[in-house]
Image (cartoon, helix red, strand yellow):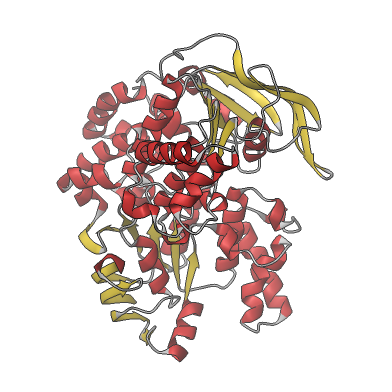
Length: 546
């Protein structure tokens, strides 16, 4: 049993440094507990306490009778509790994937035959057996996340702590990951703590604990959260169209233990009167329209024509053509490793294509003209204070300090960064705060177009709503906005067009609603169709059409 008893944890001095206060939680072998709550609520801090990486200031953490407060016991605890962190790059220590996954088992002083066997099993479980000899530096964020998971699985822990471990995974990988977690808990007997903002992950758990202001505000079964705490549910989990369908099913008596994939819920809907009522109620959600047409139609403001790009001998993009009109919001989707981040760099003028051309209003983009927000915001934060970070871009444009100060103030107000945060070191920010700071630094340069790479990864409900509204405001002001994301369900109602990348090419471009009506379009590029589309198809196949 993993037991957290009345734990408090403080960063530095003063009340503002208190990250956890009087937290108690338990996780049994074979049990999956979802830990949810807003950014900055203490979830990642608690995750670090569970395997002894941090020690509580007050209270105790015990794992199968071993306390993390004792140095010798804490070392044994770290072998029992594996942690997959929010940022996978922090866990990669070797240049080749197989060597990275082998690092942990080798440090357990295992025989080399056993190390090789564990590495093979872990790579297979994480769905990356084909990447065994790949260079870790050449992997996409989603691929790195799965390497980090494989490295932890190869240690064969008794408990698994997943801190936003699916934030950078594509739709197909998320589905297989949910199945893997279920198998590890129910068949292998691992106790799992899943820090998440994803509704399906939380509602599929055996128990949900809600953290807010460093305290456990609510704890109970997912069905109870759906039925009894609807306000808390809306506040803490991102409820897209399919997640709302799941909540309706749980309230009508569906058992989450039977699985929350669309096909599982559709089978229940078709087989019970309560389920058929849910299916009828969901029909309006499934057919809700997508975003309106762009307010400034016309010729392409940002785009590329017949672009190819390689890293050394590794071809990433091959003959890609796409365009964004002024004020147009475009979602670029594809599996991990499809080339979304590379496409971002090319659109922003941060990489030169091997062939073809990139144009912003008819000319090659210059540095700063296209605002680029990276997949990991920490990559853009490097000054001693948030204020200096936001001011860095405008200063490098050669602007007068008075104008720099005006832009910093405007950008921070636009991004919701209060005055107290501006004097903090960027390394002390939560994931959501860091993303807003990185966005503010770009907005302060007042670019003519925006490219956002996985902009909502790791954000809580409030942060996602804010980001969606920001994208809308940028487009209304006439800027083309390209969003690179694996999350089709989240962005379908927020964009004007979807670009599907597959095998380094633009495989399909279309309106979100038109593409969703043909699930095979997504499957052709290795993506799962949006869950609400899968649900509608599964219901129709069972004679319970929405």
